Image 1 (cartoon, rainbow, N blue to C red):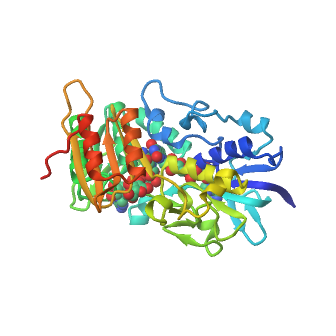
Image 2: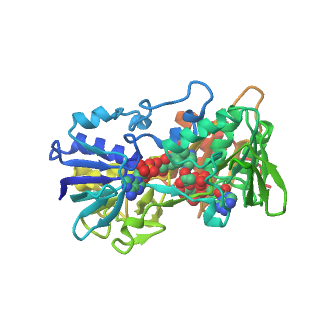
Length: 441
Ligand code: FAD
Ligand code: NAD
Ligand code: ISD
């Protein structure tokens, strides 16, 4: 025996929160008792980006309930009470262990079968573990991964016990860069190890990376590039005390932070739904190969109209919010759903951002073609740097990265990318804002 719902959202992260709000706001047909959210986390959906930023601050740190969804989009704060008030069944601390899309049922670890008419898969992604690369002992009490609130609590506790000590950060991507900045703020010395030539190599050009690496170095962070940790040295109490590199070097470690990438949580649907790009393949309405199942957020691979219908999967919060809203609009067959018909996919402008130290960058579009740098890559005394890059493909702007942009400048950049502006027009616009193209080396 089990419970039955018109709508079930599987997963309780960012996309789940935004989907719930959208259903409540626009779902004339959504009555109390019709929507259920199942999450293996112990708390209601929250804005995950806070975990590597405000949550790790040594003073005045962000704590729940302040960053439940949907405050990240300057919208309503959905506390557990909000879900109660709207008759939404929030099943927390409960893992779904199998799904049967033919029968339209989910089985939880507690043995309950939950059935749906419409399922929205919002299972997000999991961290890659060092063990998957043959490095053992990453379960030590002072080794931290960062995906969930539980992980963040562990990291806060470990940082408190390491004040003035040494941290080894493994990975030079988003987690590595944001956690290194947080460790510095907590007065912990950082050595960052990664296999590539420069940090954030999926997005940054070598010139952009050089700026951030120099900025971090000035804050005391050491970069150990083109290197890998192959084992840990541990003490008798099971704590890691050192990280050993492939070339035999030993880095002292009072703690370790690992950010070596993520994998979409698709396993429940292997062999049941079509997959692509490491995620669940959906159409421009976020509908999977089973008409009753939608997928949103990190787990969804969708055709991007702006990129000519190319199927992409993004692991970023803006995408989670927008795909969640898109799916609900499609499920409820709203007017904006009809407006999408005929397009080569979802009308989405890819958007990534990060904030570290006093810096703040945004990226819009696709980093394909030739990057052309602009602005001043030095740090002005007492001021904020402002620079960026335009990726140019066939004379048109495919993507723009901007560090230090004002709200108005970021909006201008976004619209230039959205309308595939000609590079000459963007150059003139940048110049009018005092951001001339840098000499290309
Ligand atoms: P998630 O938010 O990961 O939610 C997935 C949910 O599903 C989780 O609650 C999970 O526990 C649950 N779940 C999974 N499997 C099951 C199961 N079988 N049963 C029950 N529940 C299950 N992006 C940005 O653009 N900017 C940022 O600054 C930024 N910062 C980030 C900082 C951190 C520390 C992390 C980890 C990510 C950050 N991201 C950022 C990425 C962004 O948070 C994700 O893209 C976003 O959370 C994706 O939303 P989602 O709902 O798809 O997945
Ligand atoms: P990532 O893909 O951004 O970076 C992974 C890093 O690990 C890269 O530097 C890569 O070269 C390195 N690496 C890969 N394999 C390695 C190995 N075996 N040993 C050492 N280094 C290795 O992934 P992440 O930083 O772990 O982030 C995880 C997820 O969280 C991603 O989905 C990311 O988008 C998301 N996130 C996003 C933001 C943001 O958008 N601001 C912030 C934090 C996290
Ligand atoms: O999700 C992402 C991400 O973090 C990037 O940097 O997509 C991009 C691509 O990997 C590069 O455009």
